[in-house]
Length: 68
Image 1 (cartoon, rainbow, N blue to C red):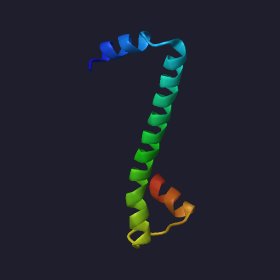
Image 2: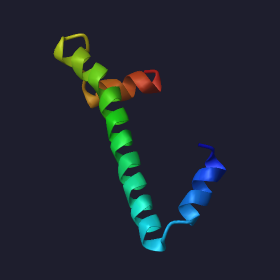
Image 3: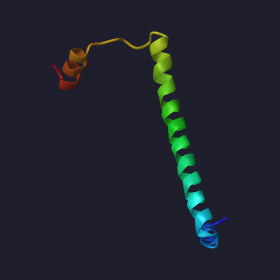
């Protein structure tokens, strides 16, 4: 279905249903964003748990980032 057709179909719905549809779409987008955040966090967590990452203090990281 093309984008314009979707919009036209939505326009033909009663306002109450349009509002409900927007709410459902927003909730689905939020859930998809959560899933993306979880996926991006899984690898670093696995690396940390397996000991592949070194623990460093905030001062060490600041010095590293500032080039000292």
